[in-house]
Image (cartoon, rainbow, N blue to C red; front, top):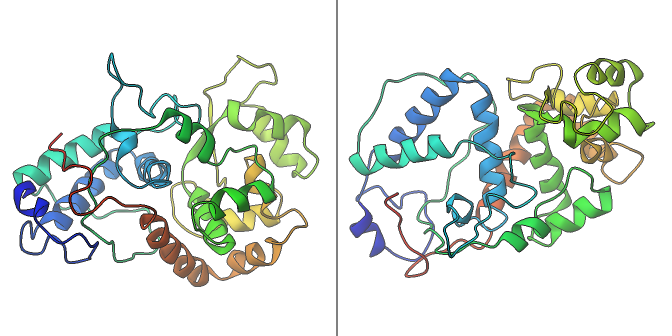
Length: 287
């Protein structure tokens, strides 16, 4: 597959592998389904891994550090945070072997979209760019809008992609300040979350809490309902519904799940088109 793909046209296309590797999407989907079946959280982890790579979208986040090279895995937004690399490794080995595993349907729900294929892998990575470009959970609304705008993504894209927090969990160290010191938070939610996240730094830093307390393993619009009720876990979450320019969009998505799904799917395609490597740029990694 790699040899044929390397000679293919330098444009992303949903049909890029139809001739060279016709079973690739089935193989990938099945491997993801297997991984999520083993651990429901892995769906959110893979989505986050995709996001953290796609503020560049070139596979650079997958590169390991070596004696002469520092990659992105230990950059502050990624270190002890992004996960799922073993699932990517499994998928890659299966794709190269063109092997299909058992068929287990994914239980997360959510929208689907046509993935544009044919991107190549980066041969280098940037610790500093990963540190500076990835949005922090401490950002204000204006900071969030700017971070996404810098990558060519609209405010609508930003709000829709934030809705990916309808699944998954975050570490106490990421939301401790919010649950103890911010006022735009539901008191009952703050109290219940504090029970699993001590106020003193260094205590329970890695304890996890769901980003969407209502349905943390189902991809739906409850994340936005939570923002309306001031139960956003991260500071950056609640900034989307805090008297600012995105309040109306959050309100809309909180009652219109189909509208959110459509916007999320469109935003995922837009994010996937951020500076992909095609043609002879980059490489096709076997591992």
